[in-house]
Image 1 (cartoon, rainbow, N blue to C red):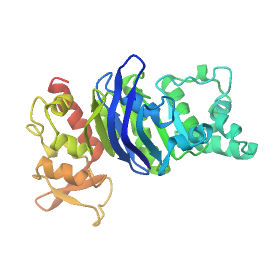
Image 2 (image 1 turned 30 degrees about the vertical axis):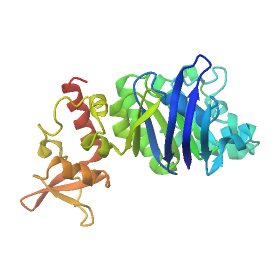
Image 3 (image 1 turned 90 degrees about the vertical axis):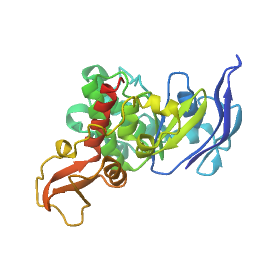
Image 4 (image 1 turned 180 degrees about the horizontal axis):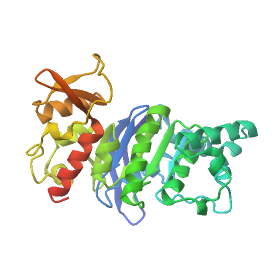
Length: 316
């Protein structure tokens, strides 16, 4: 879907922000760019829609050089969500969402239906919110509008540049959950920039960790936790203590609300952490049994919260 082929970005002052980067992002993947401040992650993101021109190398979208696209055609097919959402203050929520569909000359009835669908997708009642203005919304609600505005013209790719970093922890956690659920419905190619490893582990199909403009490691959250490429990756994960030292599966299991399906994967209460991670990298949730009796379930998000807590205790 998106391929970086030996891409370098050097600014006029001689700073090399991105240095011979190579990677490919799959269609329908949520790909997270992460790293310390100044590592090149936001520059990498902005080169994808030509907000920043590259210096050397080639970026392909759908096997076509981005330089071969008409710039309006390219950007219309790439939604963009910023940290500062910048909704137009004197326009209604519906008018804010409708901007790109109107530029693409959609029929008014189609735009209205699209606005209704998108507001419903992020849990905002269309009848209540479509005629409100941005100053009538909370920060979290405004950020939801920013996300659906990026989706309005049904682009194939969504770029998200630290979209939740300005929010309070509760709003941020809720919006992360929203993105996970939304991605199940829309299955877009999402490139997400963050400096927060906990956010990356929670959201990503794959993570790309950068340092000084170079790629240090690319892999799944499972790969990063179980097989960090070097000491920098390990330090970035804040894993000063060995993960799993205090792992107690029984404390993480939540009760069954209904009779379990025999088609769901099953693990024993004494299954080691590495095996649990391996299974949850492939499945959303697993059944847990003790002495042949089902005692509950474990899902990916519960495990991510366990690691988040471990990181904080380990000095994060």
